[in-house]
Image 1 (tube, helix red, strand yellow):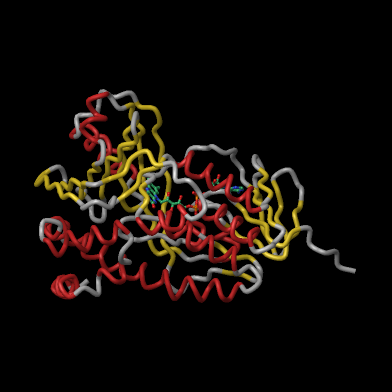
Image 2 (cartoon, rainbow, N blue to C red):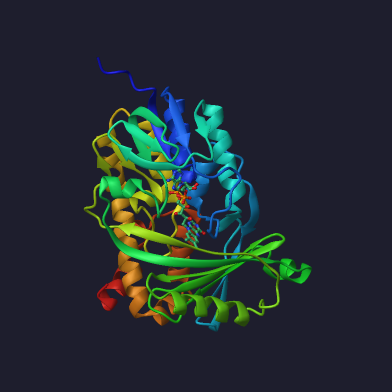
Length: 369
Ligand SMILES: Cc1cc2nc3c(=O)[nH]c(=O)nc-3n(C[C@H](O)[C@H](O)[C@H](O)COP(=O)(O)OP(=O)(O)OC[C@H]3O[C@@H](n4cnc5c(N)ncnc54)[C@H](O)[C@@H]3O)c2cc1C
């Protein structure tokens, strides 16, 4: 006789994708366990910038621990042609520290009835079973892989990635003057290498400064970060943390599931290819997988129908950005370009809708992107 699985849903990884999946699964009545190798609150290399779409998904279930609410954006083109644009009354971005944000999701998953086991490193997954590093086996009807961009579940499912980037970040101690200068404002620098960009995200007593570009150029990425920090006049600040992390985007036809194992968030390569915004993808895919754990084909259908066109639009924008960063920069100074970007930040339109706008469509046609 085959024993009943101990759990309906086992989730590997307790970031935004895994915890939103666990919350949704537990709320739908599933006996749910999360296996997380670290212990919350834990650090994650991330700008912590929430676009409006992330805010919509998050504020329904957690009190978003905002460090700042952004009403203006400064753009530079490799340190030149400074341009500051202001949004209206509604924030363009909300900034969080990932340790606080993920901890809030941890509490939401617990409140919905999920069990979260921390310091539980998963070594392997298979049909109906999760193996921990200490040899313990957890059985479940469905396994949701949410172990991020360097996890093991994407390998099991056979996710194929078509874009891999390396993000480097430093957390700097902000001086009182920094706090005044940066409050309510972020800076985006279109970088010196194709597809690269940098950011300064203020979080009260800290400034998160980071850069991202295609993987395989570690020395150049490091140099871009060092130059960027220096150009911002921040070289003398105390470095509270210095870290890096990969981002990976799936190929459109890549699998999301193998049998009863599905992948969500970064593990599935679900990420906006141009901005590398991933939290809204993690929350959406996690919530959908958790709420359709009894019908995993529905999860696949929804990702392909809703996130597929957004990623495809992001790929076209990245393509244009790699070739013509100066034109993208100039577009931000036009009312049409800025309105489209601001609407995306606020979550009023998706990337797919942005590129349907007549002006953007015309610009992309000129770029042949
Ligand atoms: C430098 C940088 C800046 C970024 N900035 C932004 C931004 O400003 N806004 C935005 O929207 N996105 C940003 N992103 C992307 C965003 O960080 C990710 O898309 C998001 O964290 C994905 O969430 P996730 O839950 O899928 O994965 P993660 O957040 O990576 O969570 C995975 C979890 O799984 C756990 N885990 C891993 N392996 C195992 C294992 N074997 N066993 C058990 N547990 C395991 C990890 O400890 C972790 O808690 C950035 C990414 C980078 C690299």
